[in-house]
Length: 274
Image (cartoon, rainbow, N blue to C red; front, side):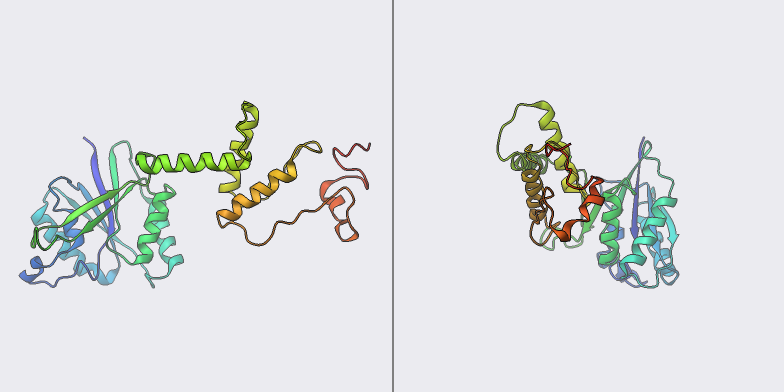
């Protein structure tokens, strides 16, 4: 049977409720995670620094009393500034790279309710990049009218957007609109041309690297280049104006293009001059 493993930070604010019995009257997100009837956490890996050891031990004891089947593991880290993006990302990236994941045996969850906003962002980025093969889980306090003293509830967020039909259909529609934009709305039936446009669409959106369009004179390279520019500009990847340089009769200030294109002077590909 597959096990469920959760990662999260010890919440120095939300998880702190003192040491007396009054702590049970306060909602604590990490404790809430282990109090769900529909979700059993087999192992909970809690990240904290040396200053939060006592809080971790209190949480561990309280979790054992409400969910004895949950193994609580201490992961002690060192963060000088938990609000520094570079430091937090590097710390969590090192943790992810050093962790021995077993996705064929375990399901992984990342608890994003605790920790600084910076830590939550870093968790998201690492999960999205699949450094952590995990889904996100968010805990929330009980609704006062329904269960004023209940454990609260949790929501699981899967970053695989293809599993959400409404989102997947929206992306599919947007991608088709992008392809139609690059083809100027012409419903071509040429499979080779359609595949080429699909490849250009993927590269244009996902990469900021220069794109070289090669083909004979009059094939529509300049027009397609303008469409690619407009597409990337619409996605906020470019700013400024589109600059078109005619290479057939370059001005004096553009003479360096001969070296760029490795052409002999006055000889340009597809211009009809040998």
